[in-house]
Length: 177
Image 1 (tube, helix red, strand yellow):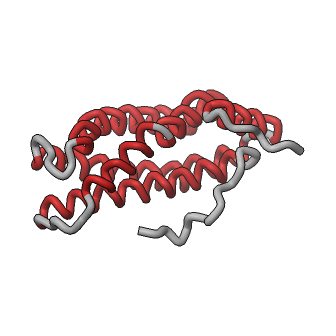
Image 2 (cartoon, one colour; image 1 turned 180 degrees about the vertical axis):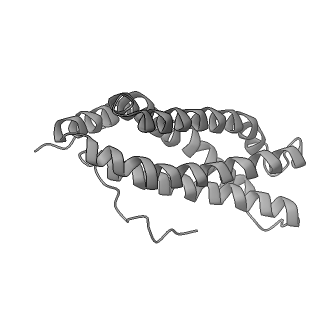
């Protein structure tokens, strides 16, 4: 499950685009936990710690991943949506994906809390699989299509403001300097 693309130390809030990319890697890492649960349910693998994996995924997606979407929707998207019709279309599409991911999360989160015995095993497997597949596609789109545009379009001051807002959202200090 270790991701070679994930740095040992995360970028700071003074590098908000790099931090968003690192968060994307963490989203994928936590999807890998959910996919492990799915495999264990499908294979009847009693050795896999479904309860522990579920606890980690629930904690992450209910906190850090939620903040990540807020970072994008409250800080980043509003600064870029008026730059071009193409970028506006991309942002609207990404926001729709956020809503779909949120709906899927609402479907699988209660079942993750029931691990290793979900109430409806087949429905959980289907929703969890879709959730992880959409997260992978969404992260790929943001990393390849959106974040490079954001990095090149925003001023240093805008990037600092985004970083400060991200830090504030998490109750963390913004780096001095």
